[in-house]
Amino acid sequence: MAWWKDDPDLVRYYREQDRKYAERRAEIDIALIRGRSDIDAVNRRITAAEDAEQARWRARNRRFAENLRDSAERTFDDCDHFDESACRRWADGIHRIFRTAGDDHAEIHALLDDFRGAAAALQRGLRGIADLLGLELPPDAVPVRAPLTELLRELGLPDLSRTLSHQPATSTIDVSELRFRILTCAHLRARTRHEWLSELRPPPHRPGWTIPPWAIDELPTDTVFDLRRRVTLESRHAALDAGLITSSLELLATYAH
Image (tube, rainbow, N blue to C red; front, side, top):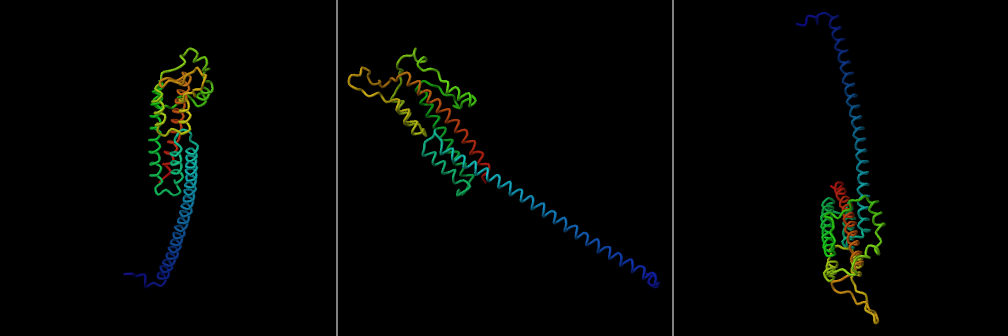
């Protein structure tokens, strides 16, 4: 039984305590609401900052991927070691990435598989030509020297006159088979094929000349030496370009979703 209700002073005291408690509770509730509002505002600012940073990061990645795509397209346009029509097809495929391709990731991997197959076919064809010339190409056909060392080696080729002075004038080669292998070498650049075939054409027979046309199974030794050098360098440079292009496409695929 609330006996204090019969005492006016106690009634006023407890009512005053209830009022102060209600005011304090209201102040605490308002403070909590303001605190939660401040926390929400801070969270929104953090989220906005994170979203902005993510947007900048995505934009940087997009620019890098687009620059990588454009670089790969230029590489195909400027490539000197693969068939012109194939390079144009690959360049067109790269051009569609991040532009009109329905599935960028699938497009890159399809192009990558096509290019790898072409590079392997070219190396097989070059290796067949090298075998016929009595030359053995390394399995990977990639130069193990540093680029500068390789360049110095190419610039410092030995004097052919001294090298060939103790060699027979001609070397026995199945010229018909060599011509066929050059003609059927898959993905060999047309200009390169023409240059190599031009070395197999016999000199024209003119009246009064005592030098007969080349026999079907013989080539001048210096021509064989030159063809070996050309095939070796073509194989090395094509493999180096293939490795660089493959790496670029594999990296580009990581940016496609």
